Image 1: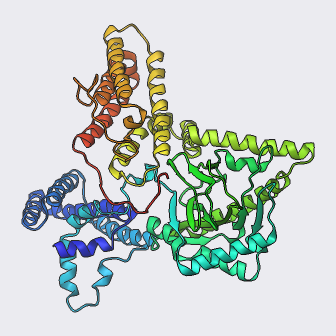
Image 2 (image 1 turned 90 degrees about the horizontal axis):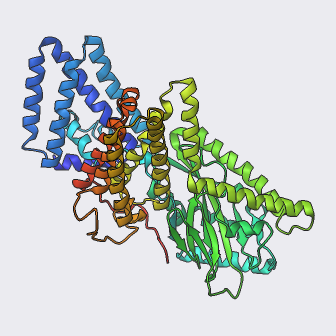
Length: 576
């Protein structure tokens, strides 16, 4: 079995693929047991018992325990469904079809395809089928990201170094060419890719397409499922200016997001900054990670063009010459969504050309109109960054969609969609542990937690009546939770130690010296205070119990220390 397990993992690495297998494999087995149930439900029970018992002496203990639990669940599900031959057949057919579809979506070859055609393919097929359920259970622990990865704030700031001989030659060629052009010392200077010619253009092409650059995306996303397009129309050579102020150059020294398409799902445009020459003055920072680095001599950083807040700042040590960079852009999207990815690429090209024209018009503003335009650029940049930093454009759009859904779909859309999401983010992030953008994670959970508590307060005030026990539970519970937060500090409260952002520290002050898990215990006591109010309990009988259930689930995750301690996918520099 161990050899089979190792082979199976190679063909099942993506969370989408394994997630669909985790749904469709039990569905197919339930369909099989449904057919057996038509003869005798006791026969289904016997088959399940024999199957689980046979695995006892083959599987690792953890895999066996999980497989046994899932098998019992499948048996229970098959027992409560009213099966017909057609329904059972459809369940098994759907299981096969959607498993094949999972491989098509992710670009991963099926395990079955590698042995079909071999002389012993029939025995391998039987073995594969018999052990499919534990193989899928095992794969859940070895996938690229967790099943909750879609709510996790992954760090999308990547670093690499261009230090191979050809890469060094190309950077020197570009450096010498730029200096020969005599760049301005009064403002930034730009040469766009479509204006380059000859050896310089070829050097740029080689750098953009080299494995050191493209490999960052392959390691993080996987080349089997994702397409990586170079966006030549946005690429440029850029020379930093030591002078900035009331012109568009000031944008670079402000916290800002480059593009407007952060709400565009399933695909991303990335900007890479490549240091062409020596630099000791200008540092590039990403406050939502957080990360910072002074890029010099072949250092490269890549970040999401439409989502990542960043800025540059000056170190105390100054450059004696120009700081020359290449800006290289990529569009990364699933291969099965090629038209969608091409659309994002086109939209970013159009936006970049329009923004480029406005930038150049305000880089050296001489007229009142030009100065007003420069102020507009700086003002909109500031407002956009504030929205992204405090709420997140994706979060804001999600909340607005739920608000519309309240009127068009169901009046509980907003309540259900916003009340419990922060618990899912807690559990997904605690499990993932690696490659987390800590600032983005904190923003997301605090944003949705604020909405959730605001709604509890709304229903409490709406149904308010004097209830001394309710008031006491609220006071005692949230006093304990607040005291726990003060003892830990905000960063440690939000997994700062677990995510490697803060050094672990033993806390012995109140309430940690007398109450286990005081933050969650205090919050649950406070939630019981909300639920004690008769009017709220009658209007929303399940709201508080679901809150407490999810809180306790996460507490069990912390107690059992249930997380995936895997090595990071991409080497990253947190700070200098």
